[in-house]
Amino acid sequence: MSAHNFSAGPCVLPREVLAEAAEAVRAWHPAGLSLLEISHRDPLFVEVMEEARSLVLELLGLDATEYTSLFLQGGASSQFFAVAYNFLDSRAAYVNTGTWSSKAIKEAEHFGEIIVAGSSESTGFDRIPNPLETLSDVDYFHLTTNNTIYGTQWTAFPKPQTPLVADMSSDLLSRVISPWPFDFIYAGAQKNLGPAGATLVVLRNAMLDRICREVPSMLDYRRLSEKESMYNTPPVFAVYVCLLNLRWLKSIGGVEAVEQMNREKASLMYSEIDRNSLFHGVARETDRSAMNATFRLKDSQLQNKFDELWKEGGIYGLKGHRSVGGYRASMYNALNIESVKTLVDIMKHFENQYG
Ligand code: PMP
Image (cartoon, rainbow, N blue to C red):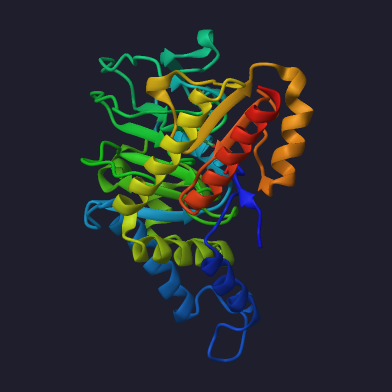
């Protein structure tokens, strides 16, 4: 029996995905070899890469003639500078909604001027600000769709006059986004996509014409696209587990079905946070994330008692990010609603004891 895993990432993965991944480590190739010991140029691995790349587009509802997906390395953090290296010629607009947006801004500043087109810093990043969409003389407009640490999430996206770029690390494939407003997105895999070690990029092909300078090959999206995500040795195991996870998502009904489940989980969780007299939510109600629910104890003296209770109750990973404290229930795609029910029962029990 495994713990109820509310970890913010790396995070819960479907048990069947883990079982199949474990088997592939033992023996996968017809030659009796592990997935980890064969060439990434082996036709069977090339098929894995192709299927993973096309399944991402299929699940996102994107046309493969218009968009390209790439499995890269270096995490979302490397995309902070890779995006700017490729596309930031003079000025770019960024919305600052928390730690990850701030880091993206800092890295992009190496390449040009950054205009902050909205920020919720003055209210402790508790909300999604109204962005300035009308800037026309910028190379692109960047936002973070879900703020993993603060527990806020965009619902309606800006329609800038320039390409829209998004860090989707923590809500990729968790909800239907249609029509797709983004020209370029990236995400570290270790939430809804798979294990750490792979990084996804999905770009509108027309973006390749906007690359504004000579870029080293490993960061050059044109080169990476031409080489079909195989310019160098890809993270074979991580990509394979992403594929298994994408197949799992398709098998349960795709993004539409998982969105419904994610909504139910979030609604259950936030109802309890609002109802329970010992807790309060952190993010502004209208901007609450369905992926990461952040909340606090009204009386911090009770912290040790609550921590003991949820740990005893088989909950894992409920602590808020070390920079903000409090609690964070991350409810990614593979988290079962039973886990949320268990946590809610623990919170109720805690209120009965100390409320
Ligand atoms: N952006 C967001 C929204 C994140 O949640 C994270 C990591 N949790 C990152 C970027 C950084 O990702 P990585 O560790 O893959 O560099």
